[in-house]
Amino acid sequence: MASLTLKGIGKRFGKTAALSGVDLQVEDGKFCVLLGPSGCGKSTLLNVIAGLVPQDKGTVELDGHSVDRLAPRDRDVAMVFQSYALYPHMTVAKNLGFGLRMRGVPKATIRKKVLDTATLLGIDDLLNRKPRELSGGQRQRVAMGRALVRKPKLFLLDEPLSNLDARLRANVRLELKQLHSQLKTTIVYVTHDQVEAMTLGEKVVVMRDGAVRQTGRPETIYSFPADTFVATFIGSPEMNLYRGMILRNGERPVFQGREFHMDMGNLRLNLVGRGVDLGFRPEDVRIVEAGAGTLPVKVEMISDVGSEKFIHTQIGQEHLTLRAPKDASFRPDEIINLTIDLTRLHIFQKGVRVD
Amino acid sequence: MTREALERSIIRLIRIAGILFFAVIVAFPFYWMIVSSLRPLEEILMNPANLGLDFRKIDLSAYYDVLFDHGFIRYILNSLYVSIITVALSLTLATVGGYAVTRLRFRGQSFMSYSILIIYMFPAIVLVIPLYVIFSHMGFRDSINVLILVYLAQTLPVALYMLRSYFKTLPLEMENAGLIDGCSRFGVIWRIIIPLSAPALASVALYTFMIAWNEFLFAFMFLDTPDKFTLSRGVVQLAGSVHLSKQLVMAASVLVTLPILLLFLFFERYLVRGMTSGAMKG
Image (cartoon, rainbow over all chains, first blue to last red):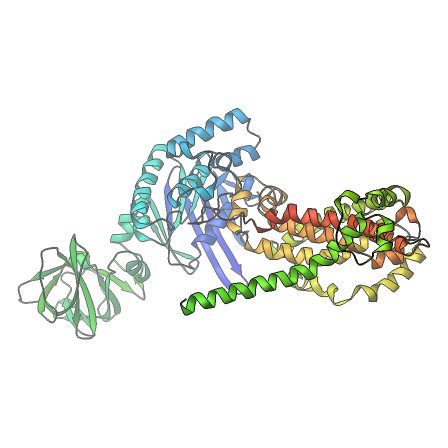
């Protein structure tokens, strides 16, 4: 177990910058998730931490010591790959024990550790099989086991669940969380799936274009997104976001958008006369009777996910999505009236959160 | 009979006819060679067109004569030496070289990778004269080891090309897993790449062995001392000798052909077996 510190990591592939100035601190025993769309550099960052890809700039530190000059095998990290990357010519037992064998651990010790790990993951009956005789879920477990068995300082997981079917993925996600709370190891986990990030991560790092956009606890990132990218990337359906200006109506600030205007209540910030992006999440909208200050919208489409409904509506040319209870019933083209929870508004200026 | 069944049976008929046709073309000289090597000399002389083999009159004396009186034991050992050393060197160099051009980044990597086959633009006959002159001047000519060098130069491009294409199909993540698990670069090659490349290595080995075993032109030009002759060179020596006996030449030819045939039968199953299945997602 160890803490991980990244300082100003930069990496270019030819003319494109894959990583530019990434700083990150992962405390001992933390479950850290790197989240971002494909091509944001999160996998490259993981490879830099592992030592598989040398960075052009910056340092990687484990427990406060730079590991930049160490080969992957000397960094004492373990990695689980998206494709699992099991050795097809070895049995499960050999796959699990390979890292230990390379490190000259005595055979009897290897056998014991392999059995312990296999038992922990419930794959002890598969030890004599070859990878091609295993199902996808079993292979995933073997890949996890191969990382676990060595008890390294740091676990690196590169989209380890993305090749499992949806139901299995949810189960393994839970197990992974339990495993982490049991073992208390430091984990860096790469994913593009926000549900994985939010459920697993104690610390979520949202990345885009090779840079960190926001780091924080999942609930912080959800409730206080640092910029419009994070705001729309996290949360499904995504946050409603409108471009407009803050104007003054008497003593009260008012948001004037393209299609609607909205009383901003007792907005403390002095943004009058500034262009802003105004955002609110689908669950922070309520359907009410028509009245003063309510927002009339036209129902366009309803997506029923079973436990609740998402109602996609239109204000003039712009879209607005809101969450409704599962028993709500509306017809397309119906006009409904909304109020928005003013305490849950997100205001961005030039893409960056202001509050 | 439906039209489909008719078509199918016609196609089957054509296929069988085709296979038979080529099988006969290939197998007939071979058959003749074996039969001639096993018949007593008088019988060949009395009835040379007789293709049948009388099992009561099988005569192995030609093999005995070839092996022990005409020095073919020596030639077989020489050929084995040349071929095995060539295979060993070719596999080693092609594995390391093929890995380097597929996985490592260095200046001139793609040029190296594509220029490997350029050597094949020069036919052996163009090279044999200058090499003859060069090796004569250096005093290396009448030597088996020089043959190894030449055969290596002939086989290495194809060996590199074959292994390079195979290595490209091996997943990079698996090598990364090996690096993290504690292998050095050579450890990855030795413990992961080589075991997984068994089919490709087998076909490279077979190809190299066949070239080295069968090669005649350079052996003919370079070797003067009968003690250093390889098999193909020995057969020609035998065929050109004064008291030519047909069944001796045939027996010698069988000795040249048989090992390749057996080798191929043995290696064939490795050539078709794919080992990477199950490595990756699924």
